[in-house]
Length: 111
Length: 112
Image (cartoon, rainbow over all chains, first blue to last red; front, side, top):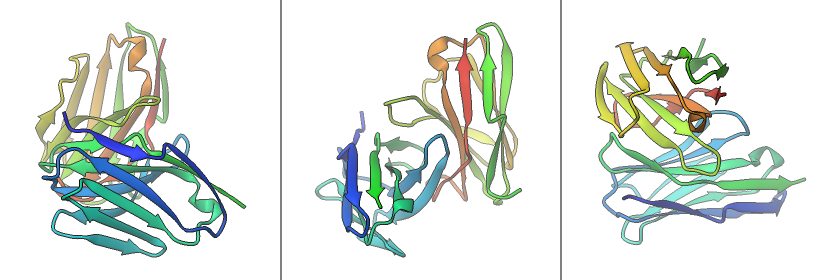
């Protein structure tokens, strides 16, 4: 069974700090990996998608990297803001039809 | 309406009821998905449709019955549910399977 692990489960940082969220997966033969954020009681918002052939993707203050050989992806958030407070989820796809999600990292940015 | 919409947003039903969840995407996508999100558990993919054909069914109990009448609409028909089926049900769409997914706000289902 494919497993996706996200560490830490919860993170609290002061505003302005740079931070890294981690995602690890058991099988390195991935199709793509997607990062999402989820606000309480809401659906998921797509942040970044990395194809298996890519090493990283950037959008604004966010940078996601992918290292297939080690089964890891990181989401780097620069200059964190209180509005970044949410749960961050990573999802790994192997065939394009199957997606495996981690349990998420709950981020709190303290003003 | 833009993006992916889901109705109703909240639903309370008894174990003997029959109800349906509706999802509509306004993005021109060809793939649609149903997910279940329970507390403290990872999102679970339930069904995948591509061009209105079901391509994935992850051992979901038969009391959940999906329907995709066209590429813009997806339904999840519910009957004789159990209390453990209480969860947030999320719909998503993508251009084709395996590409970036866009999610709706979800339906919070409570089975009493």
